Every structure is written in C-alpha cells, then in structure tokens.
Image (cartoon, rainbow, N blue to C red; front, top):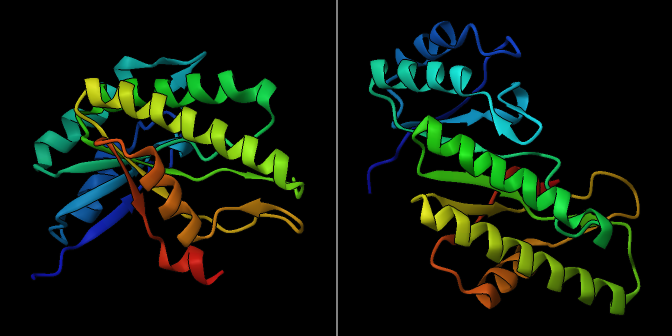
Length: 190
C-alpha cells in the first residue's frame, strides 16, 4: 500500500476570501486530498449555504485539481438533550448541502458527548444519536456523500463520549452504507 498525504486546511479569513492563497500553499506538497475545516468559516447562515463563498472554494480546488473532504460542524452533538436534536440535525443537513456545493464526497463529524451518567438516560441518548446519524446518512446518500463519525475525547471533566470501541459498535448497529467510523489516533490518546 502506498502512503497518502492528506492535509487539513482552512481559510484564515472567515469569509474564505484568502482560500486561493491557502490552497496554493499546500498544493506545492501535492497532497492526495485536503480536509476543508468548514466549521472555521462563515459558509452557512441560518442553515442556508452562502453559495457564492462555497463556489469560490470549489473553483479554487478545481483549479488546483485537489480532491477535498470536509470536516463538518464541531457543535454537532447527537448525544445532547432531546430538545436540541432538531437543531443538530438541521445543522448537519446544512453542512451536507454545503458539501454538495463544494463538490466533496466525504464529511467527517464527531460522535456526541454529554454529562449524563445514568445508564437508562445514556441508552436513550445513544438511541437518539443512532437515529440522528441514520437520518444524516440517508440525506447524505441522496447526494453521494459519505459520513465518517470520528472518535473524540471528553472536552470537560465528567463528560461522557463513546470510546472508539463503543463508537464502532454504534456504527455497526446503524449499519448504513453511507456511514462509517473514523479513528483519530490523537483523540484516542487524549
């Protein structure tokens, strides 16, 4: 197997106006792909894609013949309280719409996290996460985008998140052709 080089990239300008400069910087290394850190840009407003900005990024990628993936919203959290699920789902769907405009075929998101310790509540939250991920994968599949759920680490003390083994079990339970796990070594180490 030949190693591949992937580089994470984001514009330093919130409106992505410097994307040509940023892509040119990494293009010199001939990466096999770049991961656009779309959560660090202002590319979506009120869950609607700011098409002119996204199209500028797509044109830049096409000009450099670079394949791109996308990191979705950091705030996406399907283990959050039930009253927030629709907000998380609509945010995830908006990022898929962004991916369509960008021309990407893969989006990475993180598994959820919460401060719950009660096992009955956690079971309910995981069921909600599976439902949210399944719905996201259904929508992504209609647009030819794969969803990769990446392991994270507890951001705060007393925060629960799926360890890599649990995340793998959850992805297998969902069993969706557009949904896979993504193992982040550094996150697992932390």
